[in-house]
Image (cartoon, rainbow, N blue to C red; front, top):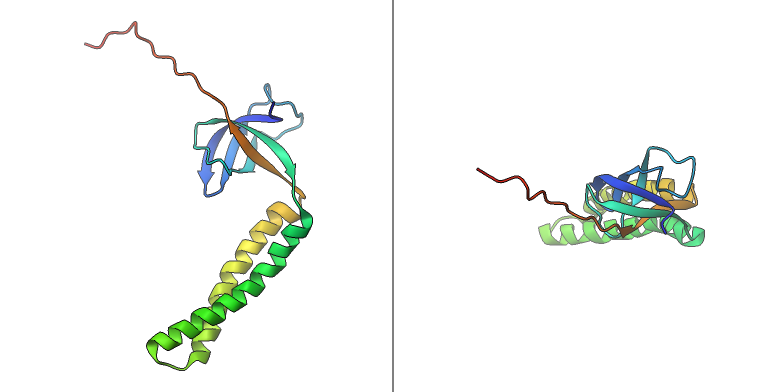
Amino acid sequence: MAEIRGIVVKRYGERAEIKVNKAESELTGLPKYLDCWNPIGAKAGDVVGAEYREGDQTKAKLIVYGLPVAGVLAGLAFGNSLATFFHMDSMPFMIGGVVLWEIVTISYARIFKRDAVRQGRQVVIFELEKQEMVIDMSKKES
């Protein structure tokens, strides 16, 4: 059984915000809303089960520090490709590519560091609850 039960309120990318049902959850002291990782793609309105999962700190640090290095390499390749395409000097394009890719990779690494490295564990949605639809057939349409 899941440690945490709730309803998905918002979904944004790989993350989701759930409203915790404290009566059905096994854990106590939970906040009213939790920001969760959503690998199963639950949509708003779905009843879900979630749990705390420990993250591998070595892999997390590799992502946090390795991603900006990969951004430098990708920026150099991107800038060189643009300079070759436009038949221009490659240095300004390479510098611009590195700056652009570093902005993207560092912002992603900061978000990942906030969620995975500092806390050490994350709330992960791992199951969808089956919902039964009740249709009232006693009302007739006119």
